[in-house]
Image (cartoon, rainbow, N blue to C red; front, side, top):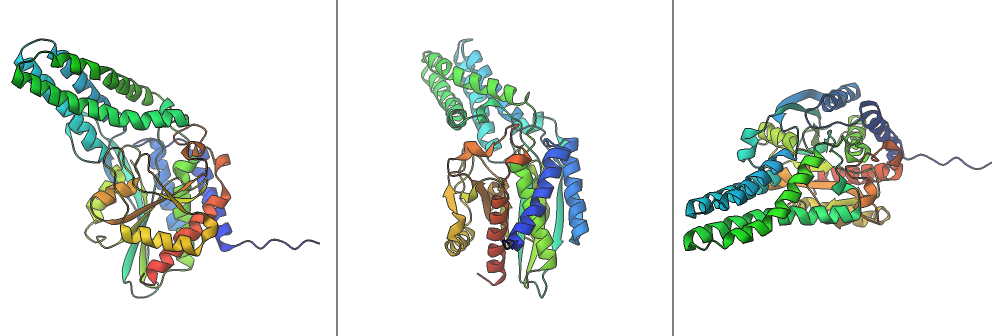
Amino acid sequence: MAAEKQVTSEERYAGKAYEHVITLARTIGGRGSCTLEERQAAAYGAQQMQELGVGQVRLEPFRAAPSTYRPYALAFIAALLGTSVAWLGGRMALILAALLNALGAWAMLAESDFSGNWTRRLLPRGRSQNAVGVVPAAGKPARRVVLVAHLDTHRTPIFYSSAAWQRLFSVLVGLAFVSMAVSAVVYLAGAISGWGGVRWVGLAMAPMELFALAMSVHADLTPFSPGANDNASGVGSVLALAARLVREPLRHTEVWLLLTGGEEAASYGMAAFLDAHGDELREAAIINLDQVGMGQVSAPVPEGLIIRRKPHPELLALARRVAEAHPELGFREHFGAAYTDAAVAHKRGFRALSLDAMPADGPTQVHWHQMSDTPERVEMEALRDVHLFVREMLQALDSGE
């Protein structure tokens, strides 16, 4: 009779993580920013923490944008309006065209980097919330760690549907910003020099902005992804780690658990959390888990849409040491095509690192922002490996590394 395979602790906790994936992605379903489903997910996360015995569990409400695309749509509309105004003739028309294109470029740059801008004053806000809890240290606390994962899911536009579309999207983001910035400079130069030919330069830029506007409008008309990998896998992994930390607390490290809302709309939840707790967590290590349910443990280095930000060097070095100790996990670093909640922490100078999982054949296999992102596609091995990886990082941090 064949001997039964012994189940490891990591496999047991991966099973717990997968149970949360099923509840979030199948029972609750698509969890758009500021929606009822996102609130249900936050309540579920808080309830699970309470049942585990996590301390100081609460929901922290904040106001957030319900759409990541509307600010960009306004930016493109401003630029296109400027291009139209330029054809009215005269220097004042060119000055106004330069101003409107500059406003569009500024809004796009600021919005992509989580900064206030004029579009946020014009667009409505919705209600969102973070679920927060704390696992105390077993002994005298000497340091803090924050484990983060976002609750909300993204819409499912066509430009995430294939490798070709994803490459086009990446190029589109850069070209749309450049087109507005160049148009602003060209129109201003024309106003100063009096050369009316600059209108043709601006007109040549307009198709890019018009295409970007069409894609933004299209995106907001698509349904929300079930979000099993992105990011029920991260939430489930944080809750599984919480279950283990309650049973096996770190000796000198207090661990905060943060399940954020509004990440897909520009990381509003992380920004609200740092606004509220940044002073007391200034020296904390922040580990963000985002899309950890398919492939091998990895890290986006760097990440961001226009401005690229690198993880904190100490945490990245620690991740590399854990990877060296566990070569079987196949840890690697890859170029971040977008942003995670860690990017806000990077910008504000916190010690942060984002971990994900990436198949060997690239990001198109993780069903990123697609209706096919369902629990059946989440891999138990990936959940097991990320649990082991983060657990090793936590123990190293607790020992003072």
